[in-house]
Image 1 (cartoon, rainbow, N blue to C red):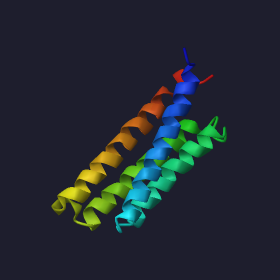
Image 2: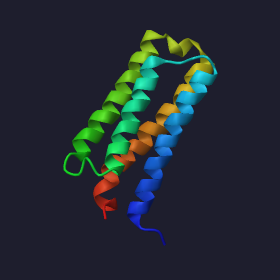
Image 3: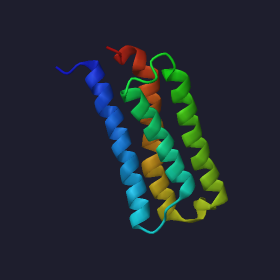
Image 4: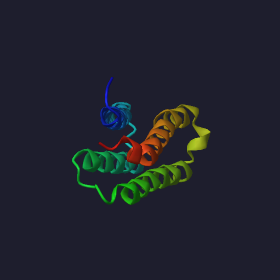
Length: 116
């Protein structure tokens, strides 16, 4: 049976890979969205710093800040781009943003239970 910290690391890496897929897909479709790319960089940076052991005592405040910034940038994107009128892009937003917010939040609040 794998240890809980291994599960944490695998889920964290999964979130990072999901962000890369999101950014690469948008660039490939010719829709590079700076706000969404910045949001992905924030999430990847937070998780990368966590996996590197840089946030030991500051993990939860930094995690909440990163998740909040990710959500805020995506909300700003929604309203500035009038995205609710475009079904395809709205669908992509839901496909990438909702899992990222959910899984990142889960990692944040489960971390004390997952620590080695």
